[in-house]
Image (cartoon, rainbow, N blue to C red; front, side):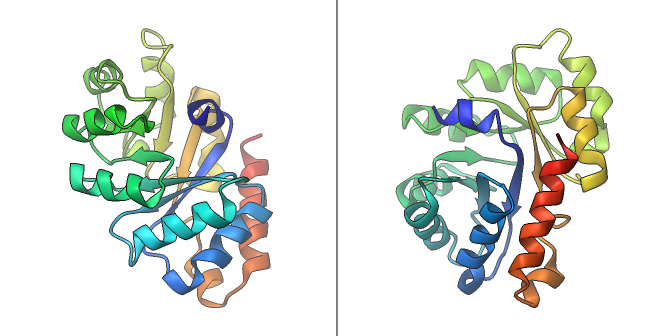
Length: 206
């Protein structure tokens, strides 16, 4: 199952506004570095094409999800493009309900214990603590006391140096943005460098 796979992956890169023409090279480099899930944000240029083509090319080795899903329309377009999981920055009950009805795992953004519990009551597969850097790893440790059955992904301001502390605190995964998807490597088409960066991230959370 997709949810079970997601819960074993530790690092999920957030592909925000990546160049469409380089998307295949980026995803391949991440795969080469040991990454097995990516989140393509819906405000990216040609996001649906990136999702569709990535799923076609890498779907047997990697989970392709859609991020920054802000509306039911975003969610519908992402699922039609082949997104295998849905991620949003906030708890939009309509988005969660729609994704659940479509049988697609949804990971809404949360910031409080009340939102965490409500998201799961609505059928969320897990929750995304966002922005995680504001609350810190200690929040996860504390909230996992009474809500230990709920799986949490931490996203927002995560660095390679801090990633392990979130995993140790009880997060099943971290969402990695620009700290992993370095603009200098992408602009220079340094795919070996990007693969090496991914490899370092995976080592950092072991």
